[in-house]
Length: 210
Image (cartoon, rainbow, N blue to C red; front, side, top):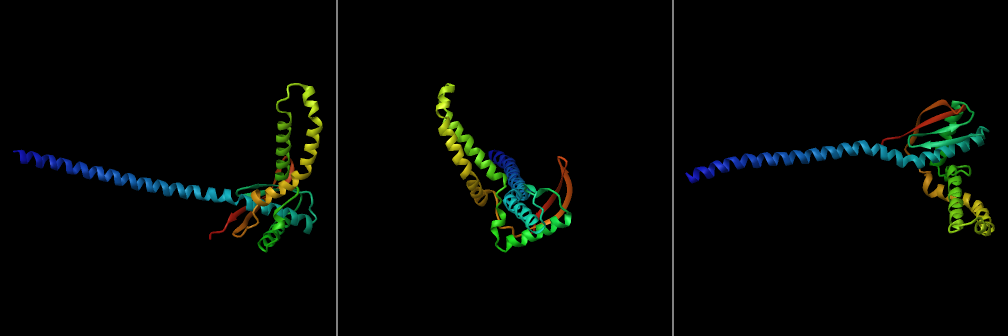
């Protein structure tokens, strides 16, 4: 009788163990599929974000070519992970030709085209340095008289920073915000639009499969 009970108990335990193993296996498979799904969704987004400095370089180079080749000097731009805006007057054909020339020249090693003295990076770096210097210079002061005593030093410091800020901005462009290695990038379409009443173009960029 005891042997029968042990066998019955053993019979009950075995299916439970098998069911537990199936649940664990299913959980592992689900976890793996969720991981694969996450990678497949996130990888293109991450790649687009990583391409933003390259697109920024293409924006600068295209504007430089528009100015030198087509005499279109009044242009500004804005780079995004999937393309860039150009604000200024030109034809779609000129924008496309300028982009193709810029792309070819960057690929050929003309990395200086990726940098621009008019880039917002220069303004941001200079502004941040001036703001931090002003905060540091005026910290701890409790009266207008104390602030005035530091005014001459602050003015001298801000003048110095306004001179070196753009150079530091160019360095930030070179090391952080632009990347002239644009191999694999190409334009898919150029759309004409308006931004705050100004003629503009959006240049959509894709990365070719490697």
